[in-house]
Image (cartoon, rainbow, N blue to C red):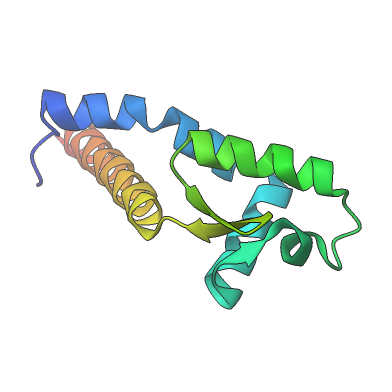
Length: 115
């Protein structure tokens, strides 16, 4: 059985709420997918084919930026957005930690019930 996460890991999990909030929206997940598949892109490119306004895409990108999920740089008059791969790896790690906690809890319950 794996040991419980330490206080630092527990704090990191609590600190991950903005990241999961950013990932908890269908349009933002579509933007993540697009940035994964196509790489860095402008708002115009991210808006194309979505049926969503540039303003709405900009709001979604701000939420994603505030969580650290995307970064942007200026290129002339455009802002180019790119996915922060490290934050996606963080999300995966947090999900794995939570999954392990559930596995451990179920193992303890099984041991309790069988004894």
